[in-house]
Image (tube, rainbow, N blue to C red; front, side, top):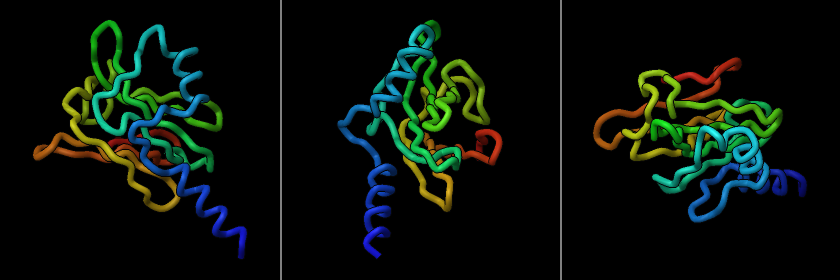
Length: 141
């Protein structure tokens, strides 16, 4: 029974928001090596990133706020921890009803529901949506 609390605490630590902290070093390395020519990290909202298992592979992924350098369009980069794949949502790439610019977003949070974590994005007192992994791709709901 001692294993269960240790596993629970480790999982809880991986799935929390990160006010005032820096994104994990591995995620920053991926961002700098593969995205920095086109995108830059922005800190429009607090927290500026979330760590969770967004694609249900059992590994920690990171969602970061980014901006496309040439257009200044805002969005989210989800960097998957397992294979280091990157999904750009907004920031010049159309996604669901959010369009290609998420500068409208003034709130976001992580929702822990079942096996896969979801990103909740919102414009206060107007609209909201959930970004989630459907087993093969990210979806807008």
